[in-house]
Length: 114
Image 1: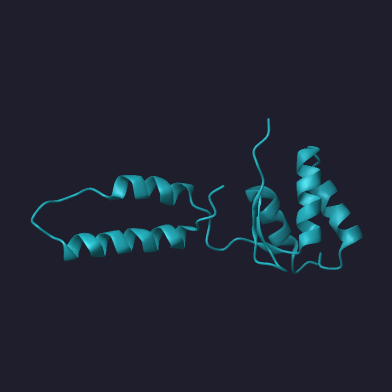
Image 2: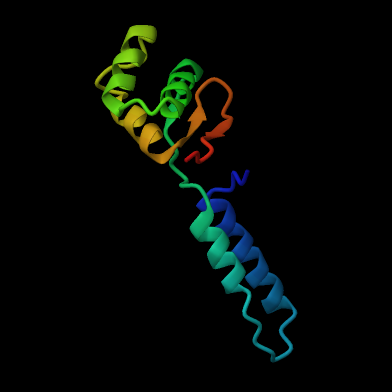
């Protein structure tokens, strides 16, 4: 699983560019193509941050193909975290299928299942 954010990939690209400049011998080397692909596949920098119990509900309900609204109702019943202040974080985590666990900082990424 790749947990690089777009910022991580950008910094890697910047370092590669600086290395090439310091070794400039008049040749132009294209290093951007692999890094462009990496950047496109990288996670957003501003992942939603949600409690572990909320993430557990998302995992369980996504695998059972429940709707966003049904999952929202379940989170309201198990966590006082779910308030109007956090409903966008919950919805973004649900839609992206990736979030950062508030208690540990761990990135959770749902695996695609058909």
